[in-house]
Picture 1 (cartoon, rainbow, N blue to C red):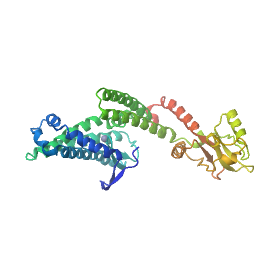
Picture 2: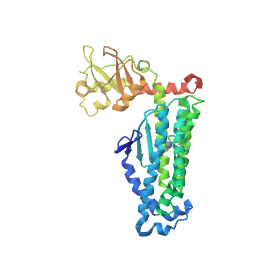
Picture 3: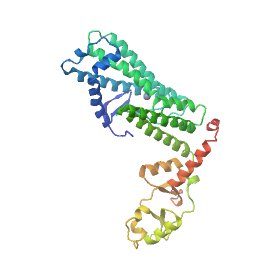
Picture 4: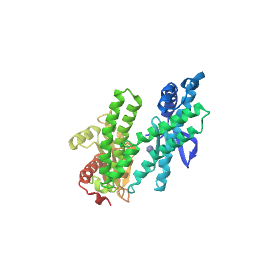
Amino acid sequence: MLRGGYRLPFRLAGIPLYLDPTFLIVLPLLAWMIGSRIELYVRLFGLPLDPAALQAGGQAYTLGLAAALGLFASVVVHELGHALVGRRYGVQVRRITLWLLGGMAQFEEIPRQRGAEAVIAIAGPLTSLAVAAVSRVALGLLPWSASGQFVLGYLAYMNVALAVFNLLPALPLDGGRVLRSLLALRLPYLRATQVAAGLSTGLAILLGLYGFLTLNIFLMLIAFFVYMAGNAETQTTLITDLLGDIGVREVMTRRVETVPPDLPVADLLQKMLRERHLGYPVVDGTGHLVGVVDLQHVQGAQPDATVERVMSTEVVMIPETGTALEAFQIMSANNFSRLVVVDARKEMVGIVSKTDLVRAIQVRVVGAAFLPAAARG
Ligand SMILES: [Zn+2]
């Protein structure tokens, strides 16, 4: 998620800043929403301002734009709060991205130091509260400027809202990270993520329902985002945690069925049906691996065509010293469902398939439920 975007021509504290295309939609929308509700906001902030004067001469939308830009600047400061505290724990931020639903600091990795994630997560909302306080004080110093007071009043209000919203205990929001980090003090990390993610899903559904009943499209979008991102986060954690320390050798299939290059496609299909395999390495008479063939290659081929005609010669290999996590990463990056495992002499010693990895994950998940927290070390 959020890999593209326009890079802004400056860095903040050494961190590049990106604008996602969705941000360019939401900025004018937000400016318009604020501009058309000046009166409502003035009442909300409890400021002694005259709404009519603020809206004079089409000024309302300029004010709306200023407030919207201020809000996004606040979001960037919030993310910087995370980034600078993260640095103290040795975790670098690759980039900060502004998008449809605010900002996102993308860390190189999730800090695993005990409690570090909670401290980094809480830094964001605390920064927002500080921005709110500063805006409130600055507002008092501007008695001559009604528009300045309006924008600062808006920022004082919205930064508190930003802090409160981000403290919802749902992954990937800050509150969810605090919760997971605290749970991880007592539970294995994986279990902590599962518990936090379960709670996130529940909250996302409640939030979405509330957004639906109040016809709040932003709330529905946020609920959807929390739901999707929470799941993605769980999966990434699961996979990293489960496959990181397993060797390819432990999960691969050793006794590999192979097919010769001159086998007709019709016979290959028979073999697939009989052995319930969807793919085979193709090995020639001298024992050399010359390609791989799977169901996709066979589709639309003439029954009497040979395997050699349809197979893929692009064989993706992984050394037998690799980890299951590396195998998974290679497969996802290239959309392959199996890799050939080779030894130091580049000779095939087995095959590792997605099914092998899924099986390894399942075994570990069941195992993790029984592991005491101390076993993680
Ligand atoms: Zn945050």
